[in-house]
Length: 90
Image (cartoon, rainbow, N blue to C red):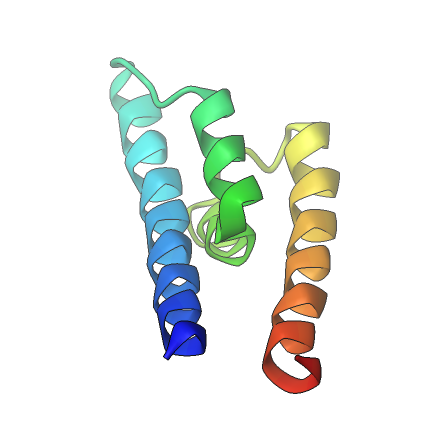
């Protein structure tokens, strides 16, 4: 049961990460209040790196920022390895 809860959390936080990238991109286009980079990173760090990375690529958002361009894929790989560990080795 606990494993199911963990997977629902992982799915949910990745959807949030994806949506935040899309929302921030739209706000950037309209030159209105933006979602802070801190919020984008916190969402990625607490488990939403894959969703954030896919949002980054899908919406072409934050792709010129070195920290996002390098850090987000690395964080995604780290989290994917962790997900595999949780699924198969625990």
